[in-house]
Amino acid sequence: MPELPEVETVRRGLAPSMEGQVITHAQVNRPDLRWPFPPDFAARLTGRRVERLRRRSKYILADLDGGDSLLIHLGMSGRMTVSGDPLGQFVHTHPAREKHDHVILDMANGARITFNDARRFGAMDLLPTDRADAHPLLARLGPEPLGNAFNEAYLVAALRGRNTPVKSALLDQRIIAGLGNIYVCEALYRAHIAPTRRAGRISAARVAALVPVIRTVLQEAIEAGGSSLRDFRRTSGELGYFQHRFDVYDRAGQPCRTPGCTATIRRTVQSGRSSFHCPQCQR
Ligand SMILES: [Zn+2]
View 1 (cartoon, rainbow, N blue to C red):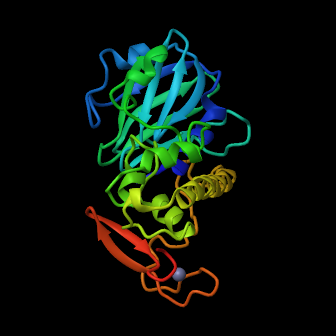
View 2: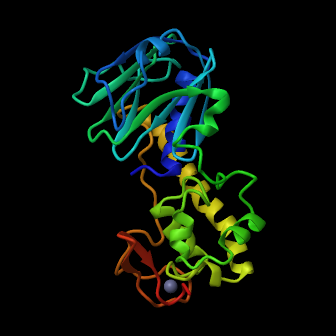
């Protein structure tokens, strides 16, 4: 499932082909994904210029001239592909239509953006740009982990008095937007905090130290995604999935990488999801 760095990588990969460009043709091949598409979806996209491509949590928002924004959610298995030669440096010609190509956008510069989603947990919607924060998917989201509103004072206050495990608190999208299982495991590992620790029982100093760690873990993954963007032009044109080295996630039974630590990484199940931690250096 794509997490914030993967979604940000998709956004950065789409931006050169979409920003400032008019959607000359929109092809919508079914009535719905996870939810129905908005009424007259293809007609309302056609002829619109994409003013800006931005991200909120794990959602991509294309702000269109005319006052609407196109919301794109990749869900579990959504894939975005760029074909055509908009920048004069791509080698992809438009591929034959594949089975799960649900939405295809042709841009004025010759780029074709294809949304493919075999499992259809993804979503697309149109919403008024000036009221985007009121959309049901966006309304209750906490601050962006890479934004200014997410800081030491905020996180200390947000976790104070909470009896839930710190891992559950960090996965709560109302507290921080866009953090998922993988990067929460990584951040808690680097901060040496056990995922099962009650959030409200961790000292303010250790909670504050989590903030730069969360930012760094995400930034490193986004940089890895940026490297993948330099390669994707030569491969399939598919955006956002890249190799990234994790320190703790999916490393059960392997040696802990903390200098001086002799323990092995342990996998547990917490709230129905895999958790990975070092029993020795995470407390
Ligand atoms: Zn360790």
